Amino acid sequence: MNPATRDPYLVKSVVHSSRLLAAFHTPGEALPLREIALRSGLPKTMAFRLLYTLEKCGMVEKLGANLYQSSFRPLKPRLCRLGYAAQGTDYQFSREVTASLERAAKSEGIELISLDNRYSAKIAQRNADLLVREKVDLAIEFQTDETVAPVVAAKYREAGIPMIAIDIPHPGATYYGANNYEAGLIGGRYLGRWVKEHWHSELDEIILLELPRAGNLPQMRLTGLLVGINLALPSAKNSRITHLNGDGGLGPSFEVVRRHIRGSRSRRVLVGAINDVSAIGALRAFEEAGRAETCAIMGQNASPEGRAELREPNTRLVGSVAFFPERYGPDLVRVSLDILNKRPVPPAVFVEHKLVTPPTVDHYYPNDSLMQAAQTVPAISSTRPA
Image (cartoon, rainbow, N blue to C red; front, side):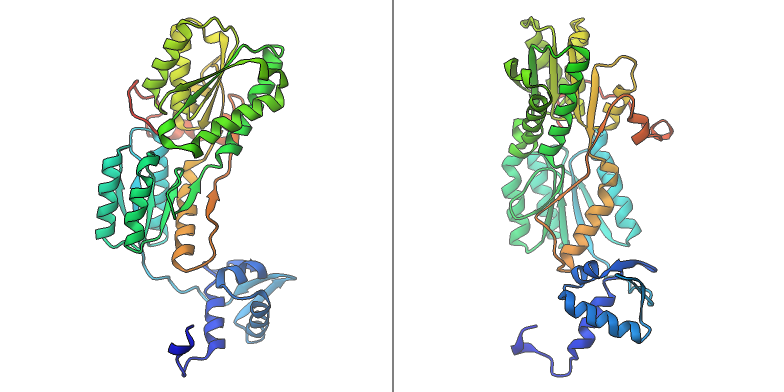
């Protein structure tokens, strides 16, 4: 509090106690001292003394050596308005992010103004203008084009609206999404081990299907993949490395791989793709050429399209690194509320990654067969998810 505007009737210890009790978000929630101090923004020593006092007054219960529970039902937070500009609706990954966020916002009683960027840089800028006019408390952006990220971010910054950027960094925004290098490393190590087991460590070529317009951060998936391959298979450094622009889409990836393999004599080829639809585009090109057995492909996202392919008998999509978009919503809401409540938030919040393979796909996604939404691979087109 600014001393010049200090309220002489305000009792600071009561204010601090209120902040401490507000750290408990749900009825019955049990928290350690460190988390209470973090959420309340109070020094750990002060939080300890207040908890001790509140426990003596019967307002807090100590459950263990370092675990506390409030005796009060948490106050319902002020209803806030979040603006969300979705990536698009053509691919299931972005649809799952949207559905997850909408469920989480509804569960928390938060108003969510949801728009669709439609994979378009121009529409993303118009949507940012609209959310600014709507005076949202915080904006969540999911748009792929790195070149317009500074423009979109500037609109929110000038309006004093904090921002979260999903998967593609925006200047000044809190990043939420993939740890791209780590995701690539996971996939690359598996591909290296796969070559050892199935091709006796013999490898002719590595194709990297890129998405240049998304910028350097998503590209780290392929950087990490190449490092992972070399760590697991040191002899891979002698293989040819081919960089192709699949633009993150099924159609473009199909076309560039189709053209490439027409002039290639490589008999053992690893393909690392920026995402699953790009990986499937490459796979279809090898299948069309009757050369599916000469390739092994790693995707990213473990999207429904990729999971459907992983369940196909004898598929050459040997794996995909999962990002779990169906879990994004609760985390995005939590980070949004932390930002709005001035609680400490790291500049980047990474999602969990797991390798999904044909033998493990049903372990991670046992309910795919029960989903009502179509899980088929889309027709070949130029649409480009990240």
